Every structure is written in C-alpha cells, then in structure tokens.
Length: 188
Length: 246
Image (tube, rainbow over all chains, first blue to last red; front, side, top):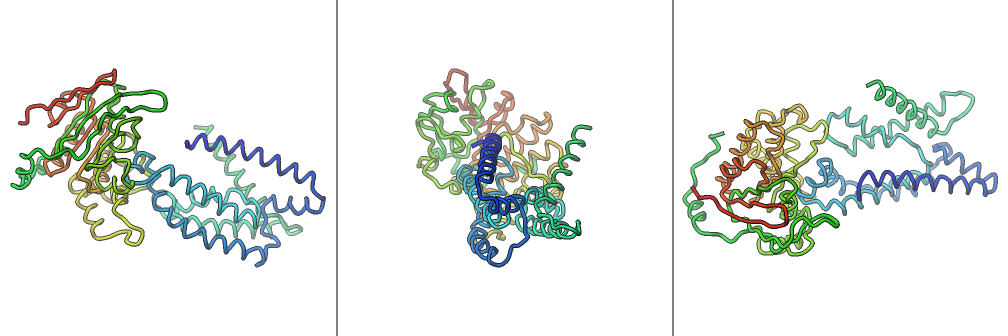
C-alpha cells in the first residue's frame, strides 16, 4: 500500500461519494434534505446530550486503541524500512491506523457533520507549540478542541443576525490558509 | 577514533578461535522485486563475530541481499536462517532484538533531538507497561558514547553535518543492542575523512563483539576493513572469500 496511491484513490472515492450524497439530497423529501444540508456543512448547532452520548461511548472504546497504536506510529516517521527494522509490521500497523482513523472520524462526523481543516491544522500547531518531534496525540487533540471551540464561538457571534454552521468558518479559514500557502510557494 | 579499540578479553579471544556456527545465513534464496529476479539460488553465511562486507557493481543485488537477510524482503524461494530458525517465523520484535539494520535511507522526524532519535532504537525492548527503564537510558548513553555524539545529545538532528548525522543513526541502531548489525551503504554520502571515521567505528564495534555486515562501494575500504568478503556480480552469482586474518 503506497501513500501516494492511497491519496489518489481517496480523492476518487471521495468524489464518487459526494455525488452520491448530492443525488440523495435531490431525491429526498425537502425537509429531510434541508436538515441533511445543514449537517453536511458541519455544525454544532442543536447538538445536545442525546447526540453526544452515543459518540462518547464509541470514542471510549476507540481511544485506548489509539493509545496502543501511537507508539508504533511514531516509528513510522523514520520510514518503512527503519520501522520494520525496529520490529514493526508496517502493513498491519498501517491498516490498523487507517481503520482507527476512519472510525474516530466517522463517529464525530455522524454527530456533527464534516467539520474540515481542524484535523489538518491542529497537529501542526501543536507540534510548533510543544516543540516536540512528530505528531503528539494529546497535544493535537487539545489544540483541535480549542480550535473548534473558537471557530464555533465565531460562527455563533461573528454575524449577529444569523448563526453560521461551524464547518463554514473552519472551511473558510482553511481556504484562506491554502491560498496564502499557494501564493508563498509560487513566489519562491 | 582509536580510543574505541579496547583490548580483547581472554574469553572473547578464545571464542574467536573456535569457529562458531553462523547465526545468520541465506540458504538457496532467490530474491527480487515483483517480476524482476535479482539473484537466484544464493547461499551465504555470515560468520559469527565477523566484519562481513558485501561488494559488487551497482545494481547487482547487494542491498537486496541485505534486505533479505534483515527480513525487509521475503525471498521468493529458499530461506534466511537466524539462530537456527527461519527468520520469517519470528515475531517482528524478536528479530529486532537480535538483528539491527541501518537502511540506506532513513528519515529523521522534523524537530527531533539526537538523544530522542537514538532512544527510538529502544522500541523492540519496550513493553506496553514498562515503557522507559533505567536499562533503556543506559543503552542510549552507551550508544552515544561509543559513537562520540554525547556532546550533541540535545542538538536537533537536522542541524548536524552529514558525518555527524550518520553517527547518530549508527547510535540508534546500537541502542537496539543487537549482536548482529547490518548496514546498507553507510558511507555513501560521506566525504573520505568521515568514511574512514565511520569504518573505524564499525571496526571498534566489531572488536567489541558485534557481528557487522555492511554493503560498501569502495573495494579498498572493503579489503582494508573486512574479515569476510562477499563479492557479487550481475548475473545472479556470488563468490565468497576471506582475506588473510591478520
């Protein structure tokens, strides 16, 4: 399993599923479609304990598994050969990492919809804040939670007349960040 | 680097005199990638406590043989034997406690310090409950001392010169504390002074009891340092020769 191939296949599968979602929205009852659209933007509005509890229960099972996989995961940062030489089965560990990643993402997405960019930005910010090597799970989680809380606060109060879904805020910030990154890379 | 040459203990000299059965050997292996076969029906044995050097022209399969010997690559046929058993039959961590490998390309994680990178070599010795012990600490300190990088321990790996960085990687493999050390072209990106320095270090480690297997490009270096030479040539055959044991 190669990283690059995985990304390209991921883009393809994601495009197919997006079109499937659109088709479902078009076919569905208008009121259901409206609710699904709001969810599809990624929002914390209207999330109460009734939605939190199932997600929390699933996560309680997944987090210990994440802790277990975090140590072999760090060895991966040195490349497959070095990881294997230190006693890791790269294929098995990679499959486990993908499975766990998909599971935790799916749990949150089921409750709050796709809130983009937080997961991409949080580990990078955490790494710079903690000045440690590689990805640190606890710090990344904490920074991600803070980012989401701030973005949600902005979504609620930035435009006094209407409440935005938090996903709109994170996607906008992410878009601006990538635009800045593109400009900077182009200037080099 | 001469301070690393320690006088040999008598027991070690005695053990050296007796020919020990090789701990690592390839038996009739055919190796290659996907459809390409690189070497067929190859048998080599790594004499215990030897400094074995694998030489040969580019693309003749030196690195491929080393990958097979270290279980990075599964042979298409035949088997690699480690301590009397097929290497494929061991749990991965068990192999990593017996055999250390320095691959041709390793990536230092961004922002890692020398001591932290060396500490990653302790992974196969750590368990879920007991993650970092005094034993681990001692192994890391010893590995850094043996490679002469103790003063660099708090520096970032990316700030080091090529020669220093390569010594850090060797220290990481040393911290693994394996009797067998396999190195894939460890001198390739170093200037001549650092090449000699690294080979002296490997020689010292060999004298201290490690079995060393290295892929080298330079025939002069190979003949100068090896106690056992494996010469490969394209066309999937190999000759073995041992230079005079002086």
